[in-house]
Image (cartoon, rainbow, N blue to C red; front, side):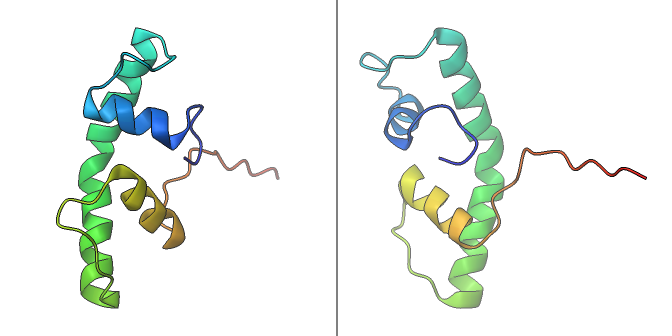
Length: 87
């Protein structure tokens, strides 16, 4: 998972609501859920675009792992890095 501190398996468990075996503080769980649900519309738009433009086939309800892989491979992952220009 690009730019995240937790692996995809942990993030998928948190998104699914299965947090009993997740080693993450409650505040971290809340942040991951908030990030996922705020980013979901963007991810769905990228998936729809890939389906339409490039005829990529996805499951009807793709897993978060599949969504992330598609967005990253399409070079559309939103970067959290800042760009500094010196002059």
